[in-house]
Length: 185
Image (cartoon, rainbow, N blue to C red; front, side):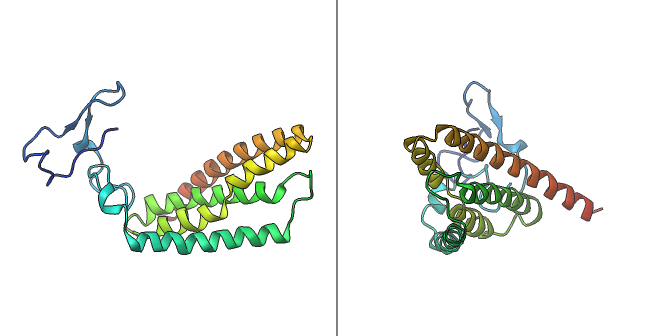
């Protein structure tokens, strides 16, 4: 989808055609058909706000604090549940699957329940859960397993993490939406 310029942009005169240019062969997108409120408190597809958000110190501070909390939690899990040399990195698998599940819950809450909470997603999503989940350690674990002659374990870990993470997001998004629907009846 193409991004429409902000109405005060000189390239977007008042009364101009509000249809975005064609994008990737899918045809024009009528930006007026988008929801009136932002889909997320910090994402409004009708406004190209990249320059405004790029260096917001409050958002960056929330991400930094959240990242420190998430990374510390991941470190503590690793200390309490170390992976033996050549063994299956179960702690990293659990961290990534649980973290992805929590991201699924958070995204439903941010989009459906608390859409106007500006710092919730940067603090908890990008910060805490971004610092907690560790796909860089996942890649290093796979490399170490292969180098150590444990290609079968590496392949199981590679597939198990991706499938587990995707299923966790799917399950938690569905469950959270069902819970919200049930509670609002």
